[in-house]
Length: 210
Image 1: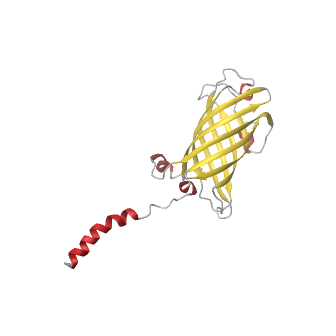
Image 2: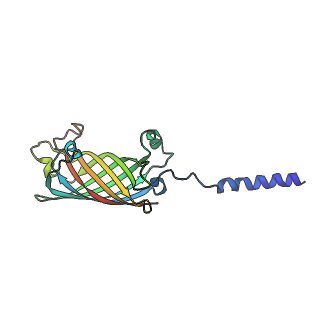
Image 3: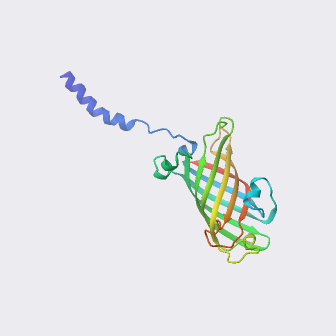
């Protein structure tokens, strides 16, 4: 009788015990806070991307302001699992950019892109850091003056590249300082556009939330 009662209790309590168990703990800060809002201010430079990387910057009379919302794909997402050998965070991002120049009217951009982010860095206990690379498309309401310079067959729809680094205090990891390069180009003929590439370099602030 007692054995039957014990078995009955196990059968009744086991399901509730299983479903009450905590889910797998998030493996990254971006999994704990999968949403991110970013504001970014960038100055346009006339140098090609390769020169910017080595520190050559020449100002073009234009600047951009961007607001974007990003979502971190779940760890079980097929794309994230596929890319997991090379990157530990994958995000989908929607970006809206306003571009203002000295000799042009205000231009608006829609810039959806996929971001690959590396977050497991050895110095994170001192400065929480991540590096990201974004690939997407950029549609502008009109072609920026720098992209028109000396070019024919310019187009509004171009390729978008984002290079980003974030930095945060370990005790306040949700608030992050952003350094970024925002790059539009025809991707070596892929978009059949004669535009010169345009680059913007600047800083912003990112907030992570769930």
